[in-house]
Length: 287
Image (cartoon, rainbow, N blue to C red; front, side):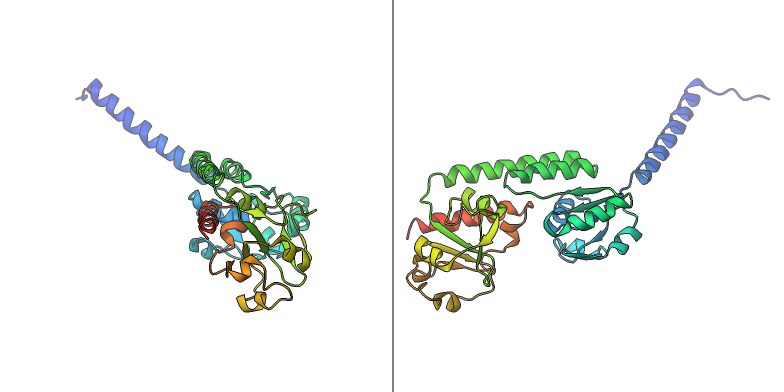
């Protein structure tokens, strides 16, 4: 006896089959589209983590250590000394590099057919742009767009507030021997200015350059941000520096006060650094 199949039952079966096929195709698509990324820049590593894509990373430099989840990713060297063979062995689809010391390794990897993307933000306004760029490259465009918009808004808010405060003269020391500081063409310098500070070496010929101790004395900075591993006592004892306003008033800030990663690296945490500097600079107005 031949059983009659109801039309409704047949339709239901077809729907189930189609759903199974659709799910299988999507699962296969996710597997085939999974990128393998090596990140040589701490900034990019942090941004990728902020976009929820740490699982795409197969290699990193020693300096890519924030957030903590990045520590699980295999190390391929440090920022200025990348192990080329390790990177190639990972067979990455994409390698993110910075500029400066990484131009050579970028060229070497490109020669063997590996796609390399250099990310080197020089201005604060570059931050929202590179977040979108990275997001598009790793398939996180929607998340990157939302993060980029929120950061751009936060930057604009601080700039509006900082425009109405007294602008303290600021000296940023990034190296002791020789003495080095930053210009407004550097990322750090732009963050300082955007937060309301007046960088005493804004017109240096390069982003990061040597400066004369006498010029620091003559500029009379109200605030010193010291990343040169010196101490309060060490700075105070420098010849002629005891009369500098920042030294007399003990307005000297070190790594423990202002985490250098917050203002030296272009990441979502830059907003935190920008707000911290604004708070310090606006407090100076009350002195």
